Length: 390
Image 1: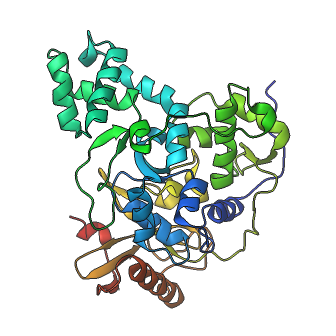
Image 2: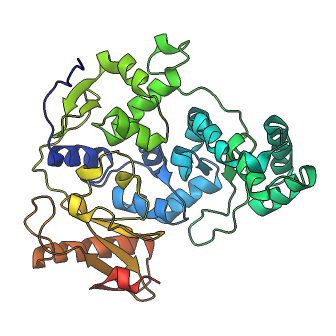
Image 3: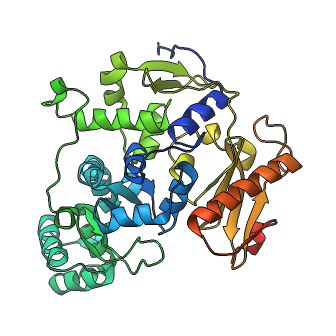
């Protein structure tokens, strides 16, 4: 007979407020940009601007130069890690998280077996490393160089194999606010000037534990996204079989249940605010990890709004009202356009779209624009973002 999870029940609003607090979204944090990137275990960064919008929503006094400066100084980097997507990580995390998620990158290659027939992956990795460490290469340039060695292989598969077998970072100016550039790659070790190293362990006695890196990742995930289930963390990391790590840590963790009965784990000293704690509106970028890092996203995404942040392959920038997804937004040439998903309320909120809510949204929009687009003039208007997206 399967043992049923025990522990107090945390409702949707309780989970929402706990997660928002850890995500630095209940109140702006005085943390530095580097400390915030480390605390959040990276920022999703398929595009250049999302990390900047993510930090502007979370940090007091943030300006883009704070993150651009870290990137130029090689204190943070852009690298494929969690869920096989580009993230902005601190240098230390780039060197420790990539080995942690390597099993997922290796599994990713199974879809390209036909295109890699006859290709020895160890040899490909060594050659690709030599190529990108001699000089940063675009993916197209790396693909063509590898084709010279394996002319019968599928070119795209060769490039994917290089990305999956090596910790490739995007070198600057890619990722710099207002500058950026095309993607050029080298290895994390070469760019940062030091080799990958084991992650710091949860305690001194774990130093010889081969599973210490996974245990450390569990604790950091809970600090930034908890309370959470095993499935939640597996969704965030793009990994499987993490149950053993949670069981090893169980004596050090608290356990709860959500309203469906799923077991949730948490750090004993982590914040779990009162569900009635006010949550101010926040403008988030597309692909913000807040919306992507749980198997059950109802703590942030009401059931009636599921899928509304997407249209085909396009992800919209998202809007939180009362802590929940309540709309999307975009910048046109002359306006910040806000679309609210109806006015029936969000997860029990008193109603979205009334005068008070709109005034708060305008105030927050003005603050965001002043931080990221100083000196530029934008109107703020409420309209149909999806219809205008083009």
